[in-house]
Image (cartoon, rainbow, N blue to C red; front, side, top):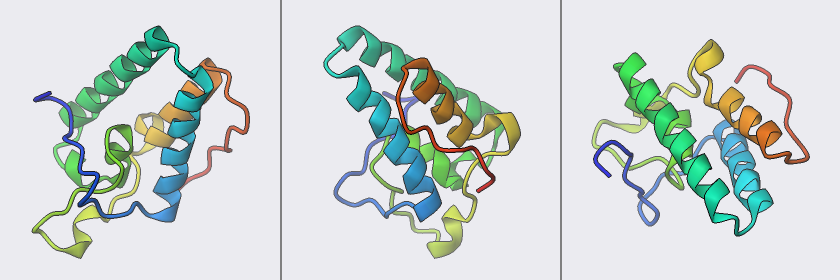
Length: 118
């Protein structure tokens, strides 16, 4: 998995409350599809494609908390200080929140949160 972010389950730093809401909604997508492996593979491919796109478009991609929603349980620890993850979500149409909202709609998940600025 060289292109994907490595998971950091035991040593992760919690997401901000705003970003945790996005993560919770991504979890709803997986719960909604149940054990449908083909849908899970499809979602994973979409997540990988989105991550690759964001990494390509944003040289400072690793400073955005929302990027880590796609593949980790929390923010990976870093040696750059507490202020390293000061950016929440990507701007405009690149927003991970908007991306997850689209997944919620695509997989017909109830309780879609409203898209407001983080």
